[in-house]
Length: 438
Figure 1 (cartoon, rainbow, N blue to C red):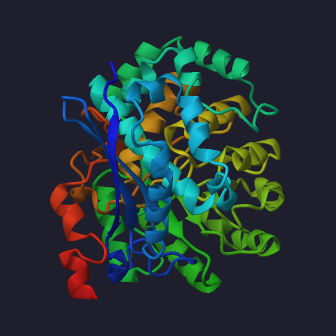
Figure 2: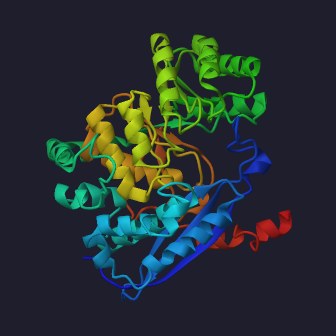
């Protein structure tokens, strides 16, 4: 049972200098510093539990999201947690519909990232008070309670609440067996850690060799900066992993629509499963054109990590603009909005393959995709969750990978809590790491 009145909300700017090793580098983001606007929520409940939430950023600009979190705090502090979860749809709408703050959104940009950070902390606290990992909290919910967390505004032309309820009711069949399967085998993952664009060939070869030894069978390669170099690197990786392993490409929004079609056509010989973010994430019709052109080559289009909200996903699905849908636990408005996208993906029969390339994203999104399999999709066909092997050591409950699969978390909460020493050390700009660098 949830309890307590929220008495405090603190937001911090935490940055890890990953750009020094070119970790996370791609065609559009050559020097990212994996960072987070990190939120801690306290209540007056005697249990002393706190809620921890974050939203992922790339360094500069994190301070803007922290400011947005502080602006939203007026809607959070002094609220009873029970009041929030009993009307979660209403609370979500309160955050996203502030009559003044929504002008710098609405439901996109820094203010929506801030909304995700706040709500991720609320979900973490709720799951902790229930003594369950977030995925289990969701799996155990009655369909009506689950739907009461979702704002269906602007998507009822694609998915009504009644249709969503039917999907969840149908998902009850075999749910127990699927949960047992997850606990036994985990959720299949793919690795992005081997082929960041800034890595030299020797490092790429070494990482691929190590990944193959560890049982990885699915690999993603960053492309888009230089075609001859892409051909060379894709050939190198395909030769290393062999013809039977799965290869994906990611351009991180680098191309024009026509350019994307031409470029990927020249990479088709390496048999990629998908091209990810080939153009602007807002260009629904552009993605549709690329999808149609690449379909005869057996190459799908994947996107979602920079989709602002459920409305963009709705249009991508309606326009048949993607073959693989990539939710992000921090770009969308936390669990609430991700639930609506998972349900739309089920209705449109599009597999969900989440984005997790960033600090904390693996920790968070594993909960969502495990829930999706158990309660919504009921399928692992053409499905896998991204994994990057960076910065997990800074989390109290880090994601665990065995046999190239996510092991379902067992600790209560949303796996969002950082170690106190890490939060202090990498606090920007006062943390000791940044004092040395700056």
